[in-house]
Length: 226
Image (cartoon, rainbow, N blue to C red; front, side, top):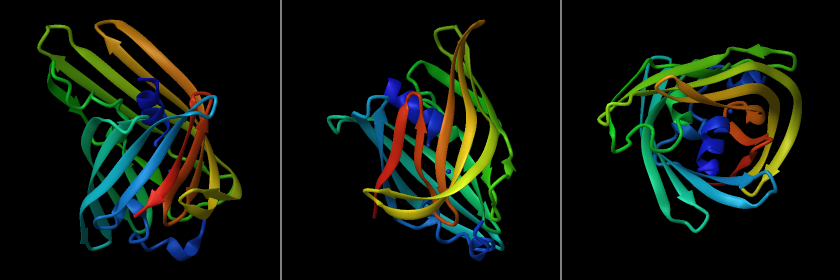
């Protein structure tokens, strides 16, 4: 469960050459599969996320994709699958924040309905050291057939572009911008909430996507792109 929450919190992202181009983002390439490995705070592997790009469409300056995210535990057993959508407008990548929901919350057996607005976390086409990026806050209400309703709030705030660094993982090497943020997940049942707070650092490659994240809970990084 800690691995699932970690990925939900920190999943999971300027070079002007990419400012009008969306096609290089790995989440916007037809049939692309991205493997993201998850590690705990001591550096031990705890699972993986496999992200499959199912369909891509472009209308004018906007490109959209639908993706399937599959969480595997450390033994390779499939635990959960979810569907989501992403988009890019004039090179600004927009990540639907439902992708940060803890695995299972989009389709638990005792959940009869889920209500949430479409909220996107933005990575602008033109980015530079010192920039402050837009916050992202998602609220979802869950109606449960056990009569005890619940809600989830995910907030990613104080997003600052701190530096530019070269990052190498098993999946490749990228020139990245280092972005820090304050992340909070509150899972509330009735009036009782259980907040999880973390300071997250991510390395974002313009025109490609986030390749690595770190926090006090652990880290994630791309280990393959096919």
